[in-house]
Length: 385
Image (cartoon, rainbow, N blue to C red; front, top):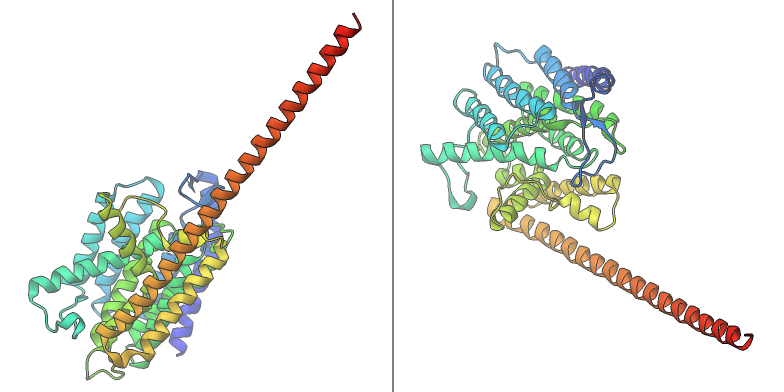
């Protein structure tokens, strides 16, 4: 426990000290995230917070995790650095979606083929157990890339991605600590410590954004931990065996994962690239329903906690029935948001229409009064001639 507290504290201190320096350098070099019609911020904000997060995470975890006892971690760090530099370049010089995807595929290949982070079984989910080699590789690549992008896409308002990241890191860290996977627990708590320091500067109104350099790293760390969690917790020989571990692993990342898959599906159905930007994310729906950014962040985190609690108490249902329940609840909530948003837009449109009619009517009345006044003045002028 002392090692975990020390690791989280070191990560917190390094990130907390680094962020103000990064903000100052960004101001001097004009390295800002420029507002546009799709973004919510209206002033220039630095988007290099990922540098501080990764600095705190890497230094603290490298100091605490013994590499010679955990050789797979050298490949974890290699994959993390790949997505970090891809994200950093995108924060400074905009990269195409193709180049970003290529970097994510390279990072995923390092994790799968060298780091041993892969899904060889679905543990009964959708009726599948042990997977053929080709299907296992395809599913592992897909899982890692989707999770990486889910945290990249959910990072749309102040404090949201970092809050969800803290939640997932603490849950994974506690589980790995409980089963005595010390290195993975340190790995998770190092990231949570860095995020706790970052969110001090990232809560609304944010002084700095994590940018792609932070969100992509947060995504790949979650991918590593959730796959390891599913593989370990599903084993009957685990110190803490969890029934329905697949569904619980998904529930821990439920809000970013569901939002990403929903948005990707909408874009593909509409004949667009799944990576094309829009305003269909869950935080946009909540904002359009009249909430402010702080409320939206709290609602999303509370919803994710609710899904985790539901999954934990419903784990005896098995992954299939449990996922069905979670999806029904989630899509019901999204449907309510769409319905309320539609009603709100109709109410606004009706109010604008009534205001326009009222304004037009007042103008007509004014015009008539002026016409009558002109006629009276004309008659008086004729009589006085």
